[in-house]
Image 1 (cartoon, rainbow, N blue to C red):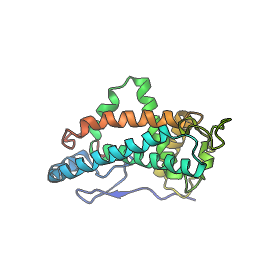
Image 2: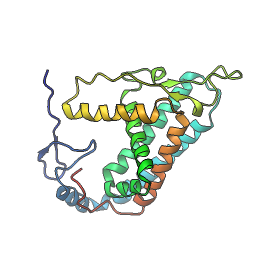
Image 3: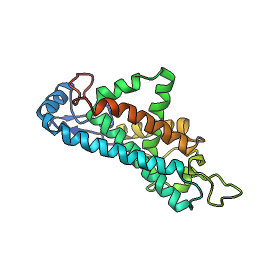
Length: 225
């Protein structure tokens, strides 16, 4: 069955366009710049929200990294919360500060950039499917310890390898994005400790936010998303 093309309306001019990036809001860089200039007065509120979100993300990640001996439902809940906060902060930075975000990624060597980008792609895959299309236990393998029937430190639990998802209900572009996220999950998360994933993600987001919180929304023409 043929899939329906994915189109959105530009938030500046209202024109219909096919997004090139997951969080694209504008049909062109010119519309993005125009919107940023017209809404510059909203920046203090947005910056305050981002600052608060980063604090909440850090607190959730710290709780996960310190936790040990929790029962599985409690552990799965804090992992889900950490996934939500990390992907929410990442999406906010990508959406409102794309040029500064790209600059933060460029601060790392090429090999490390691929790992960082793959980590966030994999976490988006988890966010979209864990608890909706797959149970938490299908994603996460607790590590059993002699002294801890609940599985020892949560940070030592690992991500399970996952089968390819069924994506027939998504439009063609949505299928492409979700398969990219799935492949990133298999490479950067599957088989690796949960704690390692969140340490890497939070470290990068704090680095990126250091620039974004002290700069205006981008005024560049890098792309239309």
